[in-house]
Length: 407
Image (cartoon, rainbow, N blue to C red):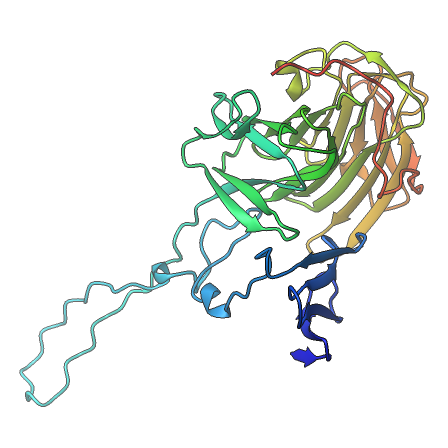
């Protein structure tokens, strides 16, 4: 509905971040026809005001007919086939069966109908999707160092990965969000992602998402200064993540949403700030270490569906706040929060969260690999469900400075 409010029009809006509420987009009748809309980027986030006027060209009307007859699928959809209604591939003419000879019939009798074969749904192209929310650029490199995106060294955009493509999603607030799509590669190939602040005028706080069939993983709160760049690495199946610390000692939160044969899991790993970080320890073999062994970095490994392994090569005595939620096939969910895992272990940060042995209670098993020789010979200790002490709306900062890798 559109409501005449005197000096302005109020456009009634359904916003799926606020189900059940009628939101209002206000457009002034006079002057520059300034418009305003208060919204949140995600449910539970702080509201922000989107605004523009007739000089910004930032408000548009798209008819529903533009979407009719098109099939939109999410990158994390695991199905191999397109659903019905996704185009002409779902039904096609077949070859008429040869009729059995019969005696001649009067010409006035109708001919038998031609047989039609209903084909199986067409195979769906499978892509992995990389995207940022926030100001900044990124470049994806595959295991052959072929580039997709902005290369800060060359100050240019590249698309060297076969079958890869870039699409722009309208993001509001005057900028569009690029999505980089690459053909999905199941297995343990590595994508290196470079986040660049070459085109920034002030510090940016970005979120990054990498999603593919059966998973959605990423980084919340990447803090990037003008001219700075950071490096992260992801296995192509989403099971391994490694992220370097910024030169200001800032580390983002790592998040997972993963389907396994038995259950689905969500996990958030937040580096805590209980004590100042020290020097870089010996490299722990993380994905980022192929670029430089001296980069302070955090690695998370979910290769074994029953365990989350967390490690870093950062000195000092910081720990982690960890939130875990599991869902079974019947929709039952359980959650647990761990507070300061690893604090007091003198910087030997390698932990395994025993998901497979967790029954949904208020305790979960954690192993500490203090010798660096794997978890098989370590004892499981039970950690209690305990509220985190890192607020979601504050960056996780460690007071450690280092010379950033020169790309």
